[in-house]
Structures are given as structure tokens and as C-alpha cells.
Length: 511
Image (cartoon, rainbow, N blue to C red; front, side, top):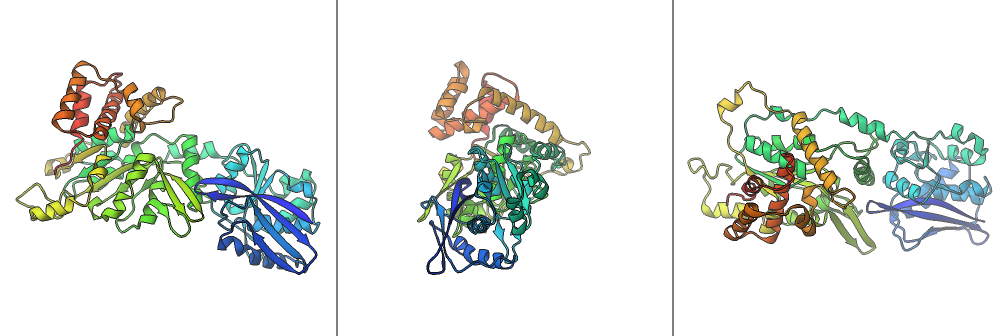
């Protein structure tokens, strides 16, 4: 007897709908599985057999063949246990074949028949809904996560016995046996608006750095903060997520899909509702930063998608690790190639980095700096020119004087700055409506030519800067992008001289 059960598998953060084809026939007893399977999938054979035995169903001594189709797609993970078990139960006539139509099954089986949560449910349910699948049965631990996808009914189960009873009973009792989850996407996003962020009002002094952070947040520009220890670089960086515009529904689902694949969603918070903030330690490996590994998973730069990747003590990161950032910063995605296939992870992040100006931390104050010329050269040599060129804004923070620290006056709050950033973001939404870009930093050359046109004095100023400062073409375009953002914060339609002058001031690091 033959049965086909729908399930899904992951390829990066994308999902494919898979047909679990189960055939039970007479012949030499055996249990074989085919279809480009990882070791985890192959182990499903043992889990399924023992789980069914412990739920009072012993498999007869038949020839059992399982094919996961299409066979040319690599299958990873433990979500195939439930569809294999359902297919076997169907082959032995425990329910009607038509009960399998239009339903996707996902879940790992414990040896007692319990259904355990698996990674990647959200993108698989999303792919199923896109193909017109009517409903999906998942472990209870994944119910809230799967239910955020509109247009498909998602049901949760705790045990294989519940799933079997659901398939055996009349369709009228479906909602009673396995109640569908509620789509609470809007509710989660509304709660996120009430979330408290670290407040910029707590940052004393550093007006220039706070201004740069506001501009960077408004245009999603990369930002580097350099200065002596204790000047407030990390303090400012950690407050940037609070002034970024809130996530849209689409952005929230895209980011949540990455966290689902990585297994970082929970029952309490099954969706990412605020812009991510990733701050990896400088001992991080290349695979953990960019993604990959033996079992390909998204790295920190993908977990920071649509949010902030903060690299504190930038010069302590090995140069080889930092160079891995160059291509993802340009392409906004990571391509990981393995023998068994290629994987694509999104990586549209805002890079914020902080570092000391020298090994001792006090350069250029030569009264305190103890570094030799060779040490200064070696310290800065950890950062390549092409990487520095990809950072839109560079700001030097200064030691905060006592009068600023003891000043009772409260600075601007995160909420006030966020209002200005959101207003600038709305201007960008109108400008780029219906296009592939959302922020000024994402503009390509043709977009810059269209939205950053210069006239008269502004054009002459950029020509002078380009020739006298020997700017690269990339730097020229990045200056214009930052100038466009500064103009947006002021509500100006045109880029003016003062906008270009300020953008140029943020461009260079002290060498």
C-alpha cells in the first residue's frame, strides 16, 4: 500500500514542501529510506519504529520504503518523524487516504510517541500557505510560532495518538480534537511598541556622537565610534536599536524566519517584534559570525538582519574574521556553498563598531599615549582599507569632562530622537515606495543619480572634495547617501551645502 504525506524542509531560510512517500509491500522485511538524507533524517527510522511500538502499534514484518521527494533536495532536521509515522499508519489502513490531502505534518517523535518542537516551522508554514495548503499539524511547542502566518490553519499536538485520533474521527470534530492556533501577529507587534529601550538621556556629553547615531539610524548607515576607554562608545551603540524605526509586519516575519531556523524563538515570544541587536565577542569564529558550520545555520550577521550588528573592540577581532564582512555588507546576503548544496541567508544589517584609537587607548594625546609608531601602525593595520571604506560614518569621541558628568540637565530622550528618525524614515518610504530599497544606505548608483542630484554650489563642493581628498567612487556615493539622510532629518527636499559638509566631516578616521 502507498501513501503520500506533505511535509517541509529548509534550505537556508527558504523552505521547500516535500512529499513523504511511504510504501509497504510484501517481501523480505526491511525499512529503507532514500532521498538525499542527512544522518538526522536517517535516524528517523529508529525513532519512528520505537515510538509506534510504545504507542501500541508494532510494525508488521513487511518491506517498508520511504522516499522524500524531490530527491535532489538535501533533507536535514528531525521534522520528518511525524509525516513518516503518519504515512505508515495510513498504509496499514488506520484512516482514510483523503484525510491527508491539503495538510502538512511536522514534528520530531520521542521514543514514547511525544511530539517535540523542531526548528524552522515558521518558514515552512509560510511556504505551505503560499502554495495553498489548507492546514498544518505541528508539535504544541511550535503552535504559537506557526500560527503567526495568515491564510493557513495551524494545529498543535502533544502526542502521535492525538494526531491518529484526529485523522480517524469525522471532520466535524477537527477543531475539538486539535484546536487551531490563533494568529496574534498584530498583538505581538503592538506589545513591542510599549517595550522600554535604553535611554539616550543617560548619555552625558558626546553631542557629536549622538548626532551621528541619529543620522546613522535614520538612513541605516554603518557607523564607527573611536575614542579613549570610558568615553561612552558602547553606551551609545547599545541605545541605537531604540531609535530605529519599528519593524513592519513583513520585516518582522523575515527576521523571525531566521530566528526560527536558528531555533531561537520561544512559545512566549514566537516572533521577533523589535529590531535585532547582535554583539558577538571578538573571539567568535568565522562560521559563527557569517554562518555555516557542519550543520549550516545562520550566523550573527544574519541574526542582525534589519537590526544592528555591534562589534565592540573592533581591532581585537582577527583581520581574517573582519574581512568576511565585506561581501555581506555589499550584497546584503550570505552565500554558503557546500558539497551537498548552497544556502543563502539575508544579512541586511547596520554595522556599528567601537574601538580605541590605539593599543593604549589614548592616542593622539601624546602626554598619555605610550605607543610607538610601529605599534600604532600595527594596531590600525588590523583594519583593511576596503573594510573602512564600507563604513559610512566615522566619529571620534572625546573624554567626558567633569562638568558634563555632573550636569543636572537631562539630554534628549530615546523617544524624542526616535520621532525625528521615524519622520525621516517616512520621507524615505514615500521616495522609494514600491522599489527594492527602504533606506538611503541601500541606494544603488542609479538611485543616487536620481535622488541625490546636486546643483550649483553643492556640485562644486563635491567636486572639490572628490579631487582634493582623493575620494574613491564608493566613498563619493556614500557621502551623498549620508548627505541625503541629513537633508531628510531637516525635511529638506534638496541636498544643501551644509548637508554635504557635515557628511564629509563624518567620513574620515584619524590615521
